[in-house]
Image 1 (cartoon, rainbow, N blue to C red):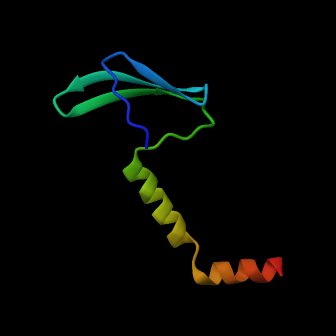
Image 2: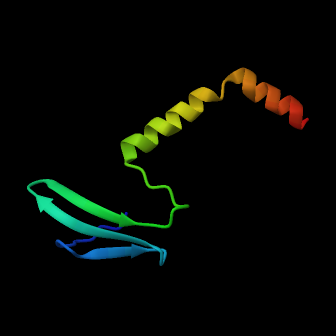
Length: 72
């Protein structure tokens, strides 16, 4: 993991097309602004984990077995 220090209104750039800016700092809370292309999904980690869990539940054993049979 890369750990960086940033102050209010400072930013970092990821992959030439994603910019993360520190908008506000209040106590232990930091407000970030994220500029990314529309095709790049941006989620809070807890939401991302919920989506992944829901996707795993949606693929049940019978569905996987049917897919295996279809693909031979």
